Length: 121
Length: 110
Image 1 (cartoon, helix red, strand yellow):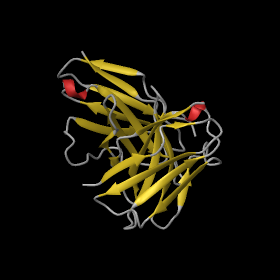
Image 2: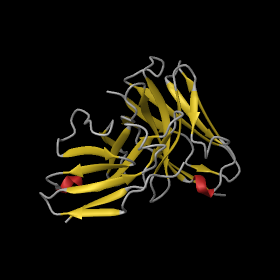
Image 3: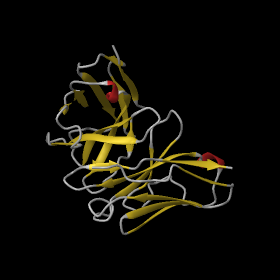
Image 4: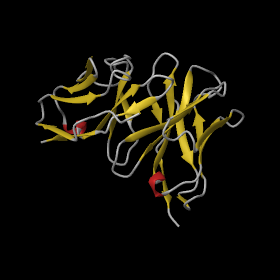
């Protein structure tokens, strides 16, 4: 059973960088077959795909966020990370990490519990 | 890349059927058979219910079914049960390794 757990600061000041890490257990991010993704949910709103990373290091981002977002991985720790630069209040959201999409199954099948990040001074 | 359009809410009595629509464009839903649906209970992470338009992951009741016609996908819940009350989100592949989610629909069991 694959499990994902987000970690990182719950409060970030405006204009600073939001940094989150997702630790994966029960599966390896370097085994191929799946991308590993970040998805966020603004309070009371819908889901927004942020971007994905493959074990090879290939990354793909939401065009509306790609100028501020970086996703990276640390295969030795079986973790992948998210950085969002120059944050504003509009980046306040619950951030989820998820497994997917798969190479053949283009969906997100395992999710972390989510972590709330508030942008405020 | 705009969010897919879903009705804000739908409701039904126990045992009835409800259908949630998800409208996109010819660049996402209309061009790919990669529509998935997620159920989200309050304070919980989303759960995959349908993928590839109409496939169910192991463990998802067969009361849940999906379909697609043109630029619109649909999720039908048959034999509505109290535990089906939740928010539901559609998601589509949008080309160039990007994905777009729907605006979400709240399902209320009367």
